[in-house]
Length: 454
Ligand SMILES: Cc1cc2nc3c(=O)[nH]c(=O)nc-3n(C[C@H](O)[C@H](O)[C@H](O)COP(=O)(O)O)c2cc1C
Image 1 (cartoon, rainbow, N blue to C red):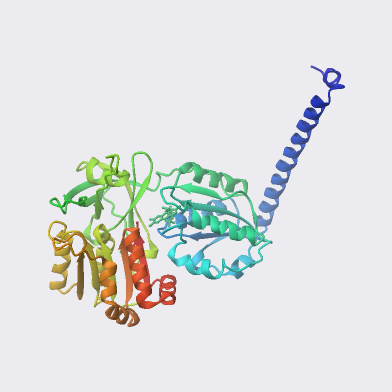
Image 2 (tube, helix red, strand yellow):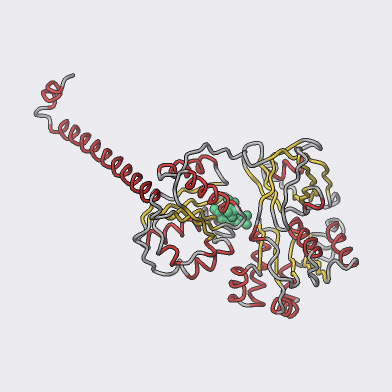
């Protein structure tokens, strides 16, 4: 149909005219939006090429994922010819944002919708201010997990604060559920529009094949869920390096990743994990724990990598450590006991909780032996399912020893907590009662109070 025919058809019909004019207007608006986007990209590229406005990549990370994605983001920007630098939000100051122009934030959420421990201070002090950041263009990648009630809560609060401060988003906040590769791809695709190098993203690239060498149930007579010691070796024979506090990350057959605290150090030649069996209400097993405690046969392989977890590395200094754990959480602390001994760090005190003293007592026995051999100065054990019926939890034991704990922590000691989230929250409450909120907030920021919770 020619133009003259269209005009003839619609003449005298106001509804059709409105429709035609609306379509033309929409088309023109879309052209204008695309044109403005291209102009902005061209401006950013030429500004960055001139080195005038470098990108600032900021990460807020508890267990290292956000840091790793921020590092990959930085690399793509550099490979794309952009000038960029990276900074941990724990070290970020308002003045860094005031002097920046383009900021990319990768922020995870921990606890119950909380910011990562090392970033709590930034949120309390800087993000509570009515800052003026209207010169800033930014984007936020929020990491989280939909199995928690407050999905991506910290990333959203960060986005809200930047927006309220007048900063302009390049695109809407991208929320990532359980490291969903499609959402991560969206982030990288958006970045390539801003001048970062476009590369295929392969989530499996960082992993190697590891063989199961041994698996031992530590509480076969327990009436609670079983706890396994799992030993793995790299199929290639090349053992990576890691340090106390680091994590083993496995990739399940359907592409999900799960983290476990490394209970061994490289000197032992193997990766050793303590894994609690998880059986859900519908009878199915947990994704990662099912693989490690049940499905994987001896000599069979899984995809695994060791991962730096700097928020749970041994605190600086040579003061004694107060190590608090329950159940499989001892995994994360065992390596610290060994590393402390190697560094001649003396006076360590362990508070450990299990269910039943005999049926779930294998790790308690091993700890008692370490007191007898002089590896540990003190051990406080507590049980949540003793025959006496008198249940005690690690946070109760800590509260009961409050005077000692105060002396220990004011006398140069540091505290490390490893285990389930609710145990960690109970210990946090007890510590704040003993030492005060100011001490706890400062110790979290300084790394004298460290947590590995799951
Ligand atoms: C103890 C714990 C608590 C968490 N709490 C939340 C939460 O409240 N909301 C959420 O969306 N994700 C939560 N997550 C999921 C993390 O945000 C997610 O695993 C993220 O990839 C971790 O990134 P990171 O390694 O940079 O800290 C939690 C994870 C852990 C281990």
